[in-house]
Image 1 (cartoon, one colour):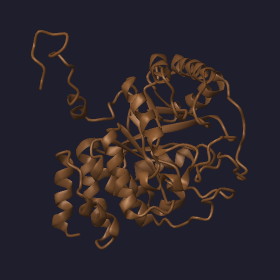
Image 2 (spheres, helix red, strand yellow; image 1 turned 180 degrees about the vertical axis):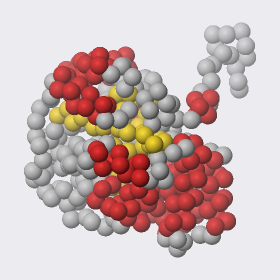
Image 3 (cartoon, one colour; image 1 turned 90 degrees about the vertical axis):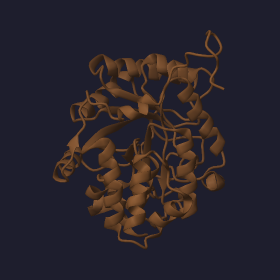
Length: 354
């Protein structure tokens, strides 16, 4: 890939155009210098997000004992991983954990619970939890991640004050059955569409390092782009002992950075978030990833510990970035300008736009 081609990718991204397949595969192939790819992705990142980094935190509402068999997950059915296992924590405890992260700079709190999907009691618990968090921190964004949604559940979450719903596609449709047999890629797409239709900000991303090919990565990026998410978490597999993928340690820092650069080209004005596994796979090159991602998780993940928050904040400062304030909009205004309320056609006296 030449400097001219990288410049072309930057120009296309700033215009909102996706790479074609050949361009995308070239980013991943590694024929060009990594620093040139990162620099190109950084130009796109700065165009839409400047030098801001948004901080997010996870509150694991219930841990382990999941009936699904996702091969990457330490909470899966049959997992022998020695992770914490507990039932629902109280809304008060969740609000306490969330409040500590907000005080440390987190702008979004992600409420996550293992399981196939929530029952009615679970939705009620989350409603009470959102209320508890918002009572002390009304400005914080609350994202919810509860698995597959049934009719009416997304609407209840939105009414309770949830800002976003997170449900990752994780890998390409063609190989989804290789990592999970208890639900399908289509099930995940359906849940994202339910959440979006209810007015929740769609959050969906991926996990890399599970044996996917370059074509799988491109296929997944294309599928995610079709869903038009506002937030795209990029996870790198944490190979837990006791899971089917516990022996996969194939990622390198360069591979991770090329994937992040590709996702920045596919999602130029979207919140691209550094998520699970960044510490163990990016290692000393974590600061370079901030030139591509504009968002990251602060502190611990669902079942693994992350880098100490103080170290994260120091890394952001040392790399020349600033933590995004609560009052600052994350997404550029241009994305919101694309939404036009219908004022013609059915129900009006104006002709339809057909």
